[in-house]
Every structure is written in structure tokens, then in C-alpha cells.
Length: 73
Image (cartoon, rainbow, N blue to C red; front, side, top):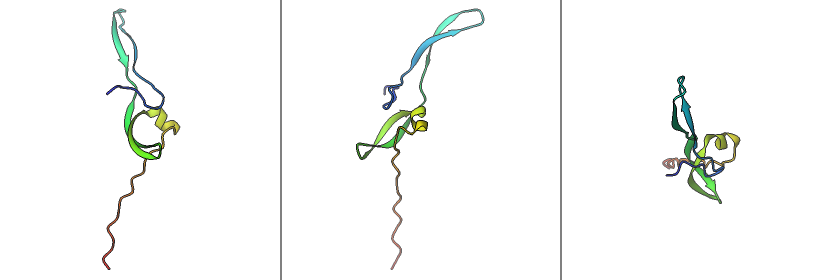
């Protein structure tokens, strides 16, 4: 699974760790992705979305309604 947001396209960034002695090693910053059931084109679908898109309201989450058992007659 690619670590990419399906809404904004955010993906890992690359850079360096720099120690106090100025030793440099490679590192990655990975976006905070969540798997969410959202409504896409009118149907519920599982999408991978970053938390900034969720917080900004760019995703309409699917609300699951529990079916209550009918009361005995």
C-alpha cells in the first residue's frame, strides 16, 4: 500500500537527520494516514486519507446505522 493521501496526494518527504557532530543520515517524514469509510460518488468506500484532510472536512464520512431488532408483538 502506498503511503499517499487519496484526497490531497500528500506522500512521504525525504531529508536528513543531523547530529550534534554534524553526522548526516537519511530519514523520511511519513504523513499521518487513516483508513476511513467515506462516501465517494454516493457509495461508501474505504479510503486512505491524511488527518489534515479529515480535520479540514474534505471527506464526508459514512455513518453506519445499527439495525435494532424489532420489538416482539
